[in-house]
Length: 567
Image 1 (cartoon, rainbow, N blue to C red):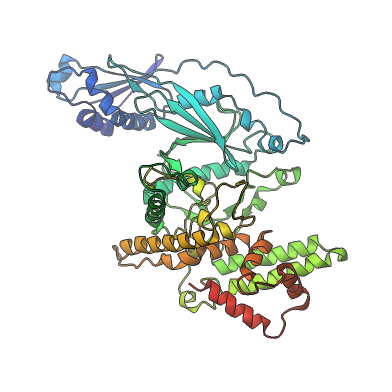
Image 2: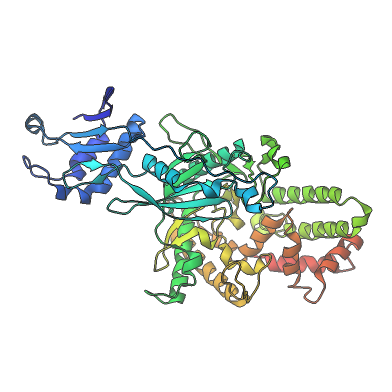
């Protein structure tokens, strides 16, 4: 039986969509032969209809809104028990012209927010509503059996470090909500081609992970990498809204239905069980994921290429950055974690010594040499080095992990069960010791710069004491081991032992993230406190750079670092 698709009054398209017909005849409306459908059949089947609509849109590459009406003729009833389903596609109503965003201050404005966000924070709600009506849920049921276009409203805005997030709600029976993310750099003066590539890459990675692992990632509805070619007037990603609340709220929320500590345990257990679903994704290099596009809109299996590097959204893009060539913003891929860390460390020393080349800055140059010596020792005892014999004999492979694995990007229900993982900007493959089995960042707080406890001002939200964090790290490690054990011995009988990295992953993460960056000083001060507790750390590092190791000092440092990093 044919599914007739009427695109506009000027021309009609008729296509057979067997899969839709199966959903329509078998699931959408159930009735006795010869009995007319009643409106009561329709609301309960709305989700099935949406799936059918999605397939129809893909089949005819149509983005118009639709109005549906079910028609049954006597001839059709005599020919088949399956009634035809007619989809009348009509052009959307004319969208009223939206006023341009207000004038913004000049580029030399003293307001840092304006220099970073430009007009992004002032996009009118009308633009978001127009975008939602164009790409969002297509229909809602009505009492007379017709399906009319929906309405939408903006229910709130928020922002992270790099994106403005807008929440939109439709007036369908489920009060469907969606999210629109607009990058802080999504305005004309600072937008660069590589930013568009990063959006496309993010969308493909999200689709790939959802297909391969089943972890709760938002479904991407629409996206655009242009500024002038869409109704919003900015690049964006539109996706489903994950139900629940962020862990940064739930972790401290003492409201019922369960005690707070039980909720925290549920969060950690559910998170470990969710993350272990990434275990089968293994790659041979550190780098970004690239995909082949097929004609039907799907993507193939990924390969690893150069790492896409985009300036974080909270930083201002000056003229020097905006003139950077694209090839200089894509870093090479690496075959081992040791190769990556040592090359980045050597580049850091060369760059900093050149920058602080004036003899007046000899003190800083000594610190740079001291940082290089200490990090060289630390890297020697990281997993998969020549000195860590147990794993050093294994061929190293790399895995996927959320790029910002922190409490604001993990969504849970009232009981603490994971319902969503969000914020998949610039995903890269990472070493196993920093992968899906690693501790979430909010359990690593005491190893980050500017950690305070107690934090009376709570500028970064509530904090836990070092002893509490240590306790929760041990408990999360236990849950990760249980999750790995539960999935070990699958089809190939492989043992999943990634949990071995979990208990010290906060140290591995800090080494890997700070090497070659300004955070090396802060991390080393915390690490040195474990075995030279009463020494002035800055002087210790400077003296090491200026005079080298004292007799027996290098051996002592190596023994202590090996003991701390051993898993």
